[in-house]
Length: 171
Image (cartoon, rainbow, N blue to C red; front, side, top):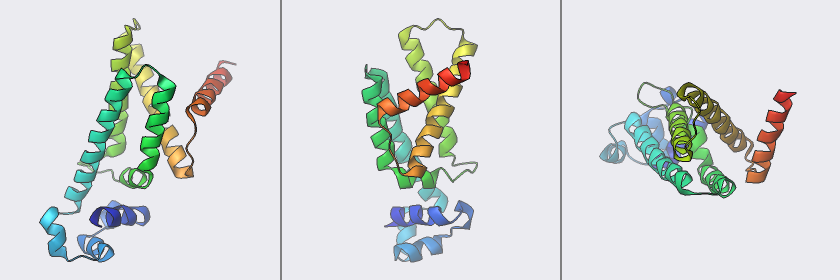
Protein backbone atom coordinates (compact mmCIF):
# COMPACT_ATOMS: atom_id res chain seq x y z
CA UNK A 1 0.00 0.00 0.00
CA UNK A 2 2.85 2.38 0.75
CA UNK A 3 4.42 1.91 -2.70
CA UNK A 4 1.10 2.13 -4.53
CA UNK A 5 0.09 5.26 -2.63
CA UNK A 6 3.45 6.90 -3.26
CA UNK A 7 3.26 6.23 -7.00
CA UNK A 8 -0.30 7.52 -7.05
CA UNK A 9 0.67 10.73 -5.28
CA UNK A 10 3.59 11.28 -7.67
CA UNK A 11 1.12 11.23 -10.55
CA UNK A 12 -0.58 14.33 -9.24
CA UNK A 13 2.05 16.04 -7.05
CA UNK A 14 5.69 16.99 -7.29
CA UNK A 15 8.01 14.95 -5.07
CA UNK A 16 8.79 17.99 -2.93
CA UNK A 17 5.07 18.55 -2.25
CA UNK A 18 4.47 15.06 -0.90
CA UNK A 19 4.72 14.65 2.84
CA UNK A 20 4.91 11.45 4.86
CA UNK A 21 1.56 12.42 6.41
CA UNK A 22 -0.05 12.72 2.95
CA UNK A 23 1.39 9.37 2.03
CA UNK A 24 0.14 7.74 5.23
CA UNK A 25 -3.35 9.17 4.72
CA UNK A 26 -3.42 7.89 1.14
CA UNK A 27 -2.17 4.44 2.21
CA UNK A 28 -4.51 4.48 5.22
CA UNK A 29 -1.71 3.64 7.61
CA UNK A 30 -0.31 5.14 10.77
CA UNK A 31 2.93 7.15 10.39
CA UNK A 32 4.54 4.71 12.85
CA UNK A 33 3.91 1.94 10.33
CA UNK A 34 5.55 3.98 7.59
CA UNK A 35 8.59 4.77 9.74
CA UNK A 36 8.91 1.08 10.64
CA UNK A 37 9.96 0.49 7.01
CA UNK A 38 11.37 3.82 5.80
CA UNK A 39 13.29 6.72 7.35
CA UNK A 40 11.31 9.16 5.18
CA UNK A 41 9.96 9.73 1.69
CA UNK A 42 13.46 10.00 0.26
CA UNK A 43 14.28 6.53 1.61
CA UNK A 44 11.08 5.21 0.04
CA UNK A 45 11.93 6.78 -3.31
CA UNK A 46 15.46 5.41 -3.04
CA UNK A 47 14.20 1.89 -2.33
CA UNK A 48 11.85 1.92 -5.32
CA UNK A 49 14.53 3.32 -7.62
CA UNK A 50 17.11 0.82 -6.37
CA UNK A 51 14.76 -2.10 -6.99
CA UNK A 52 13.93 -0.88 -10.49
CA UNK A 53 17.59 -0.30 -11.37
CA UNK A 54 18.41 -3.82 -10.20
CA UNK A 55 15.72 -5.24 -12.51
CA UNK A 56 16.93 -3.00 -15.36
CA UNK A 57 20.51 -4.20 -14.87
CA UNK A 58 19.29 -7.78 -15.22
CA UNK A 59 17.43 -6.83 -18.38
CA UNK A 60 20.52 -5.13 -19.80
CA UNK A 61 22.59 -8.23 -19.07
CA UNK A 62 20.03 -10.20 -21.06
CA UNK A 63 20.57 -7.78 -23.98
CA UNK A 64 24.26 -8.51 -23.97
CA UNK A 65 23.54 -12.25 -24.22
CA UNK A 66 20.52 -12.23 -26.57
CA UNK A 67 21.48 -12.54 -30.23
CA UNK A 68 18.09 -11.44 -31.59
CA UNK A 69 17.59 -7.66 -31.07
CA UNK A 70 13.94 -7.71 -32.16
CA UNK A 71 13.11 -10.44 -29.68
CA UNK A 72 14.94 -8.58 -26.93
CA UNK A 73 13.21 -5.30 -27.82
CA UNK A 74 9.83 -6.98 -27.41
CA UNK A 75 10.84 -8.36 -24.00
CA UNK A 76 12.18 -4.96 -22.94
CA UNK A 77 9.06 -3.15 -24.16
CA UNK A 78 6.87 -5.46 -22.10
CA UNK A 79 9.13 -4.97 -19.07
CA UNK A 80 8.77 -1.18 -19.27
CA UNK A 81 5.09 -1.30 -20.07
CA UNK A 82 4.40 -3.54 -17.06
CA UNK A 83 6.04 -0.87 -14.87
CA UNK A 84 4.43 2.03 -16.70
CA UNK A 85 2.86 3.97 -13.82
CA UNK A 86 5.83 3.48 -11.52
CA UNK A 87 8.32 4.61 -14.16
CA UNK A 88 6.39 7.69 -15.19
CA UNK A 89 6.12 8.64 -11.52
CA UNK A 90 9.73 7.95 -10.55
CA UNK A 91 11.07 9.81 -13.58
CA UNK A 92 9.52 12.96 -12.12
CA UNK A 93 11.89 12.80 -9.14
CA UNK A 94 15.07 14.71 -9.87
CA UNK A 95 17.00 15.52 -6.73
CA UNK A 96 20.63 15.32 -5.72
CA UNK A 97 20.06 11.77 -4.47
CA UNK A 98 17.37 10.49 -6.81
CA UNK A 99 17.46 10.84 -10.60
CA UNK A 100 16.25 7.65 -12.25
CA UNK A 101 15.98 9.20 -15.72
CA UNK A 102 19.66 10.19 -15.69
CA UNK A 103 20.67 6.86 -14.18
CA UNK A 104 18.83 4.97 -16.91
CA UNK A 105 20.45 7.17 -19.54
CA UNK A 106 23.91 6.25 -18.23
CA UNK A 107 23.01 2.56 -17.93
CA UNK A 108 21.79 2.44 -21.54
CA UNK A 109 24.92 4.20 -22.79
CA UNK A 110 27.09 1.76 -20.87
CA UNK A 111 25.25 -1.25 -22.29
CA UNK A 112 25.56 0.15 -25.81
CA UNK A 113 29.31 0.57 -25.39
CA UNK A 114 29.66 -2.95 -23.98
CA UNK A 115 27.72 -4.35 -26.92
CA UNK A 116 29.95 -2.44 -29.36
CA UNK A 117 33.01 -3.82 -27.59
CA UNK A 118 31.59 -7.37 -27.77
CA UNK A 119 31.07 -6.92 -31.50
CA UNK A 120 34.64 -5.70 -31.94
CA UNK A 121 33.55 -2.40 -33.48
CA UNK A 122 36.65 -0.45 -34.56
CA UNK A 123 35.03 3.00 -34.45
CA UNK A 124 37.07 5.57 -32.50
CA UNK A 125 35.97 5.92 -28.86
CA UNK A 126 34.74 9.50 -29.25
CA UNK A 127 32.38 8.41 -32.05
CA UNK A 128 31.22 5.38 -30.05
CA UNK A 129 30.48 7.73 -27.15
CA UNK A 130 28.47 9.90 -29.55
CA UNK A 131 26.54 6.85 -30.80
CA UNK A 132 25.87 5.69 -27.23
CA UNK A 133 24.58 9.14 -26.27
CA UNK A 134 22.25 9.34 -29.27
CA UNK A 135 21.06 5.78 -28.74
CA UNK A 136 20.28 6.42 -25.05
CA UNK A 137 18.32 9.58 -25.89
CA UNK A 138 16.35 7.86 -28.66
CA UNK A 139 15.61 4.78 -26.59
CA UNK A 140 14.59 6.60 -23.42
CA UNK A 141 12.34 9.05 -25.23
CA UNK A 142 10.84 6.22 -27.28
CA UNK A 143 10.00 4.37 -24.08
CA UNK A 144 8.64 7.50 -22.42
CA UNK A 145 6.46 8.33 -25.43
CA UNK A 146 4.96 4.84 -25.50
CA UNK A 147 4.31 4.87 -21.75
CA UNK A 148 2.74 8.33 -21.82
CA UNK A 149 0.52 7.28 -24.74
CA UNK A 150 -0.28 3.98 -22.98
CA UNK A 151 0.60 2.24 -26.24
CA UNK A 152 3.23 -0.43 -26.67
CA UNK A 153 4.66 -0.67 -30.18
CA UNK A 154 5.83 -3.95 -31.65
CA UNK A 155 9.57 -4.26 -32.19
CA UNK A 156 9.10 -4.27 -35.99
CA UNK A 157 7.21 -0.97 -35.74
CA UNK A 158 9.99 0.58 -33.67
CA UNK A 159 12.74 -0.53 -36.05
CA UNK A 160 10.65 0.66 -38.99
CA UNK A 161 10.22 4.09 -37.41
CA UNK A 162 13.96 4.37 -36.70
CA UNK A 163 14.73 3.35 -40.30
CA UNK A 164 12.28 5.96 -41.59
CA UNK A 165 13.89 8.66 -39.45
CA UNK A 166 17.36 7.81 -40.74
CA UNK A 167 16.12 7.86 -44.34
CA UNK A 168 14.42 11.21 -43.78
CA UNK A 169 17.46 12.93 -42.33
CA UNK A 170 19.70 11.55 -45.09
CA UNK A 171 17.60 13.27 -47.75
